[in-house]
Image 1 (tube, helix red, strand yellow):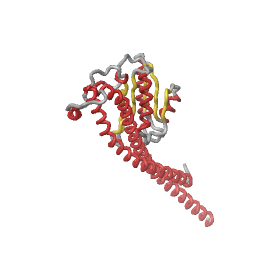
Image 2 (image 1 turned 90 degrees about the vertical axis):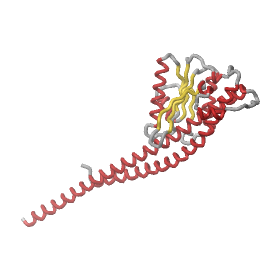
Image 3 (image 1 turned 60 degrees about the horizontal axis):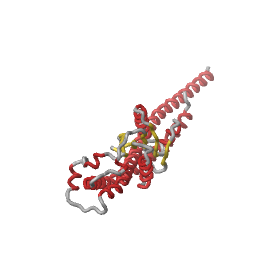
Image 4 (image 1 turned 45 degrees about the vertical axis):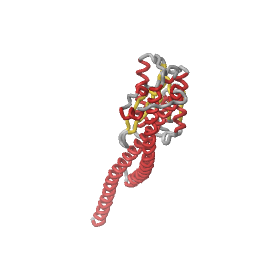
Length: 296
């Protein structure tokens, strides 16, 4: 049985750990609020971008020659998991990588070669540990991504697609639902889905596209410039969703850790009181035994 001093040391150590987890929970909570605000500010821009693409595509006489729209037989696919740079976020990183590996197994089963582009230290280290060849990785911005970070990933993905090195680009990331729920999402970013340009995103968007417009330069040229920006926007939206999900997962994990620490402290305190009572009882018995020996 542990001594009172041993139990005191354990309680002191757990209390110090609880202070750390509580502080991390508060930091994650503050960062989560900022991440949610960035997502809300991003959504109107992304919606208008899609509307503009739909309108321009309808005005175009032909979309031939737009490489990012071309569909071809999928022989090579690129998987892009968006992970975090740090741990202590529950299943945040593990569930993204689990989905990415499941997609890889499916593609390889169909005879498709898989190449890896990864964002985040956790994703890169896991792929390296499993001896996968990583085409390119980006790190250092998972908790606060900038638009330039999305541009870097989008440019590399578009470069591989336009060069014919890959025929499909699949994005895997955590979609933010709430602070308690992060859902793994999987999206094909290249080639750009045809239904977007067909205007199947909802009647609300269609109402903003009615009317006669004069395009300068030609709609085809405008669309050629818009498509890369659309890919960047989708990557940026996914990075913001991933950042908010990471903070939500970390906040929840640290809250659970703090609660577990409190429960463990209560249990150890009870054990310590029992040990102290046992020591006191033993001392009393020894005193009584000594007194009996003197009087006997």
